[in-house]
Image (tube, rainbow, N blue to C red; front, top):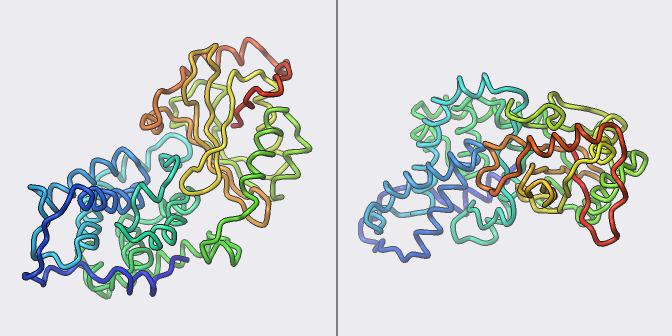
Length: 361
């Protein structure tokens, strides 16, 4: 679980008590605060586009004329407070829409350096510590919480806020905030399975090689090679949001190494006109699927892999184009699906040695 005690000592609280401290901000300072706002909002919402909107609104409140109020003792903590409060309102208003979402919900992917996406202001060590709290698997667990539980848990266990300050953000009592965080912690812990290294925030040193082998096996449609890379109880969850042509989306979660391997290998065997490239997705190992130039190119989907004990234990894929707009240009999914349908069950011809591999689910 997140390191509550150290984060609390590191951040302090979001008080507005020191009225003698100067608070003019440089462009770099304001960008750091914007990243802090984005990081807090993204953890609350699991949406890049909504988090960007929240961050923009938060900065208007924190530094309306490019200057942070001199009464703010800790600008980063204050920014987190403001962004979380705004995001909580957004999450509450979006609850019905999320409950009626078509298919499985997976957060909008953050691709690349998520540390730069903002999680702890200018504190580099804090960035590294909190990057694991941006993982897709973690955010999927948070989605099962109520908005108040999610806010109480994140503020206390991730950002290190005392319960009394969490209560002020949520709009409840200190006792209620403590109970909300405790209930959320139990629910998350019951579903979150980690190795000691993962709990300590240490990435699997073999993850990059595993992704390389995973992509190669998927491209070759090699079921046996894929099975060797997957945990027995591996699960694959796809998010198409009901906006993907038939044959491209995974309509429901698939479990078991053989079933997942067969599903993944099937795309290569069916001649998917696309390639996979290794990438950092939500701070961990992952892949981006791109359409071949013959069908116009562009992003098809983003996939995060959870690696435990040298094996892939969870795969989360986002192919819903509305959740990939920040990764534009996007692929023409109808064109991709048409090529697959035309190819039928035939296996795709072997690629040239230097050609990029094909996508998975």
